[in-house]
Amino acid sequence: MEKSLNGVHHITAMASDPQANYDFYTQILGMRFIKKTVNFDAPDVYHLYYADEVGTPGTVLTFFPFPDARRGKRGTGEITVVSFSVPSTSLNYWMERFANLGIDFDGQKKKFDYEFISLLDPDGMKIEIVADPNVDSIVGWYNGEVPPEYSIRKFFGTTFYLRNSNPTEELLSEIMGAKLVSSEGKIKRYSLGENTSQSFMDILEDAVSPRATGGAGTVHHIAWRTANDEEQLNWRKRILDAGYYPTEVVDRNYFHSIYFREPGGILFEIATDQPGFMVDESFENLGTDLKLPEWHEPKRKIIEQILIPLKTKSFIKQN
Ligand code: ZN
Image 1 (cartoon, rainbow, N blue to C red):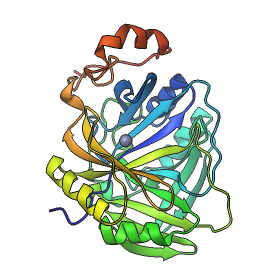
Image 2: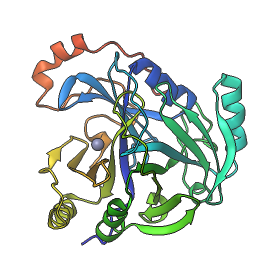
Image 3: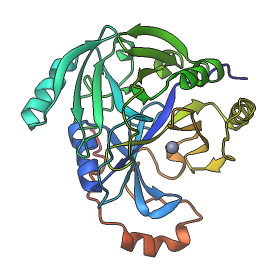
């Protein structure tokens, strides 16, 4: 039985305009668009997936873009920052890139000995690009907009902004297997997962700020990795026994999921590594067609009419 969850599996956030979202994450940040599908629970909205070249768990950022969505309001009870790891010597490249593209950024700064820069996505979601020596050995996406030696490798971690962090820290450390690695000022840094699947959670407590309001530019939930269905059921039992209310297992086509709300207000998911994103598309075709799970397939015509068209680039064969 797994002693701890294996870091982040994916992070899902809300957006407004799907095209602006696609252009930013593929053209500016250089991630690979690996899946165009719909929100399985509300199939009139896209579910867009960006990741490394194959959608390795720990690299997958997904969005529900509601074209007319209002922006959320930052506050407690949410994840306020999504951080990505880039190779340790690549921050200069990124600063130059953003400057050339006319993208505002802040930095370079240092937190827990890691240099980083920060910027906002088109909906105002805060992103950090962190120089991370632990990812120097991971190979980057070779066919993206960013040269592979500089490209985003994986999630570095997230920042949890909480009214009262104690119950969340207890859940992370005593149930999920996270370790407190360091604290600096008002931030406590926890780590979950090993080696290349390690992710950090920076916990920032603020007892007076109002709660966040969901909307475009806010994180909807964070999913943690478990190896397979059997381990997932073990985790479900452990979480139930600890007094939380996990859902039954839900089939998300590319992984299987359970969900529960942690005591600070953030929606947690535990997702399996299998079966992965090539279950319905080949490596070259990842992200090419609108993919629907078989139970929504009969409604394809209606769904396609409702969704606004999204212009995406195809994989270019290298010689
Ligand atoms: Zn999810």
